[in-house]
Length: 203
Image (cartoon, rainbow, N blue to C red; front, side, top):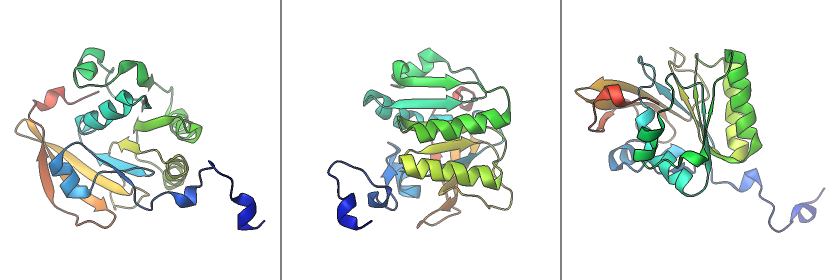
């Protein structure tokens, strides 16, 4: 089939998406550190404590939901607390929460949510991703041009399909965010984020 036959007005093609499209974090320090969230890619957020690092996403999720985009949370470690989310600007009517009975179902749900093409962002908590699952999720995120955030310990050897990988630790009531992997950016440096007690930094 020639290119002219595919030249249909209004049809979006994955090949036309920017190679490294980013969504702003709404934090000057984070944007300077890694340039924003990769739009159609997997972001891995490593932390030792369940839920730690979720607050990094809240300004972005607030902007997405305010714009009418849907957001999915899959297997968050804590019950999402609606008043706290609403106080940070998240439009609750645009927020979905899914609790899967097992890890395989959670991975399946994450992939299907991405492939639906109707969500503005997906966040997933779980065990380290097997290589095959990471590749499927990355392909689904790229096809939908939807950011996927995976929380939990990533592969110890640094392998994986994440376009961006961060390590998050508590630091005197703030979060220390260390860039472990980032396409086209310097890695290994850290920035401090937030001014709230870290025990409130959870879904």
